[in-house]
Length: 368
Image 1: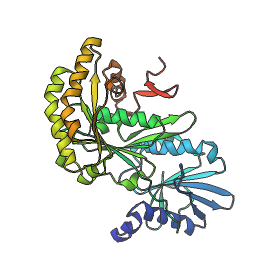
Image 2: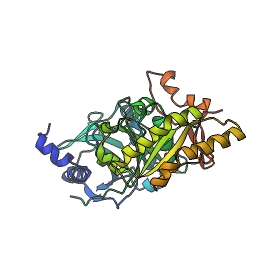
Image 3: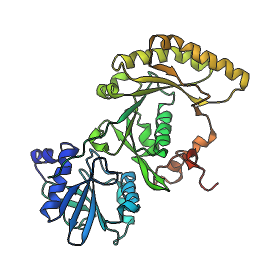
């Protein structure tokens, strides 16, 4: 094993790790080039004799997940990957159980080699597979958009909203990092280490799930959007992450009891966010919406807008999302999302409750 000093040198961040991986391949007589800035699918190209390959470099504080691997496989099946006859997926830590199951399912003829970079070489997964490991310029990280889902009260649907938002954005073509800051860690219970969302027209997208111990922006070079499922206790959330938020979604309910009960909670939520972040756009979003009929809905909607009017007048970046335009609707179909946890506990997997049909998200009901 490398010493802690040496390990820190090549694992400190994505830039140093990518350079280290490039050197490992170079030492094994590969010609190495860095991919173009923001090139989707891979970070390095390598060439030796008749072999032309691509390398995906993953700087992670946790194990590689199955969705991350499946996205790489999807890229290798795309027309853009036709010139390459071998591929390498190199990371800092290891591979999760589901990721190892994906690797085992490939068989011996698949030219994809997965490994963990060490100081002087690469430990291949499974042991003994691979073509030998091995400076380059760096790819600067892209600017990311940060969403927070937060209220000072638990049980109002933060995890539901965060997961739905991630699913909708993934279906629109974005790679998403979901950061689970709630001590209950319900996102992990629902989505495990993430979801891979296939795209019939090309390479799909990933939803990767992290907690505060495994999170580092270097781990999500490919993700354009970060969604934080925040703890209801503001002090339990990373203050620097709260400062990074571009948008904050505050869930509430559209019923008389909910609005009366949550009015002061929303007000204190806005005050707490503003004590750290003065620039984020804050939005109230209705969760678990049931249509009460036209007349009652008009009364509820007007009351909904009236309750938060005082905040809107003093905070120009605070707004209520019109429930006629966007809301999380109550539906028995929500039970579909997560039913896989009960169907086969010995073979856990994650999947979205909806998929893309005709260009927009629709509920995923299997073959029905």
